[in-house]
Length: 107
Length: 125
Image (cartoon, rainbow over all chains, first blue to last red; front, side, top):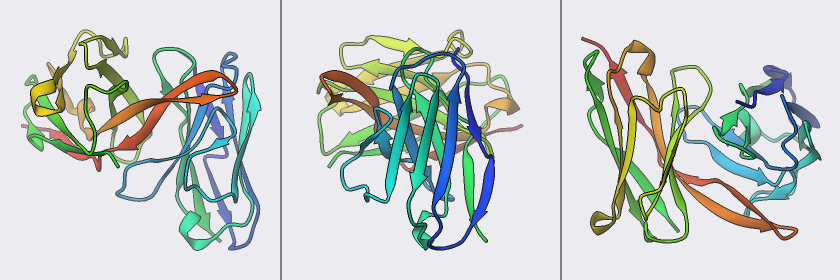
């Protein structure tokens, strides 16, 4: 199985901050990576696929980059509705695997 | 817009079988999508369980494969999950989702774009 490692596991940030989350794959996955946002008690919501393509209706403050084994999710200006847990997922090979999550909290 | 809704017992006894159904609305289960099950133990991360195509083709997580069956009922526009010989470790919120193919620079990218709200299944006597 491909292991997905996210860092940090949690972070505290203020409204307006620029936030970057990292996801590392245990082997190369090209750009077969998705990012999800999950709020408490809710299902994950897809944000980005192909490492950098924004899902429809996702605001442009979210951006993704990377290829191979190292990927990042950036939120350009953190807003109150962005406080959530973010997960990466590789879909290059089976079984599909997720990172452990990064919880973004209010400072 | 497609919507998915999980249903099934919220409590299952140890060694029993967990059975869930996902009803799909706003789209046909016979479309060119796969249909997935994913779970999340309380306070933990996400685990992919398996998926099915309307023709009956399946893929399963090897860690669960010996205990899992995913099936589809096209007449009811729904698909189902059965997990046998459950233990407390199977306690989780279970999500169903649609896996759709998107194209980026001529390559196909298939990922879970729409999810159900999830249902908590507790394994306890």
